[in-house]
Amino acid sequence: MKNPTYVAELQKKLGAPSSETLESLRLLKAFLRLAPDQRSEVIELVERLAVDPPRDPSLS
Image (cartoon, rainbow, N blue to C red; front, side, top):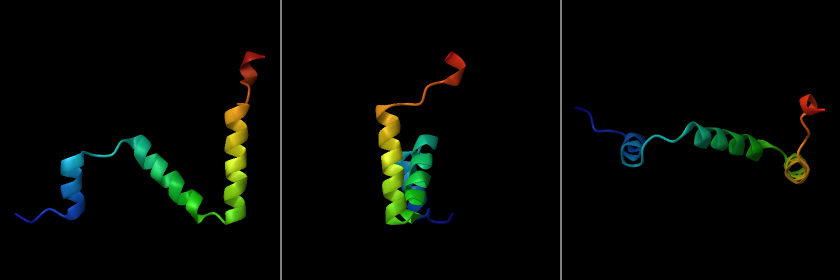
């Protein structure tokens, strides 16, 4: 039997990450690839949406 890899050992100890965790890591990775001015635009957009979420057009 082969020795388990470091990742396999961690997964054994900690369990598999949730799909939400994986998606969050993908989004963080994509965010870090953006240029600094693009990052600030994304942050501004998210802050605006958090304060004033868009209305559902189907409710009108």
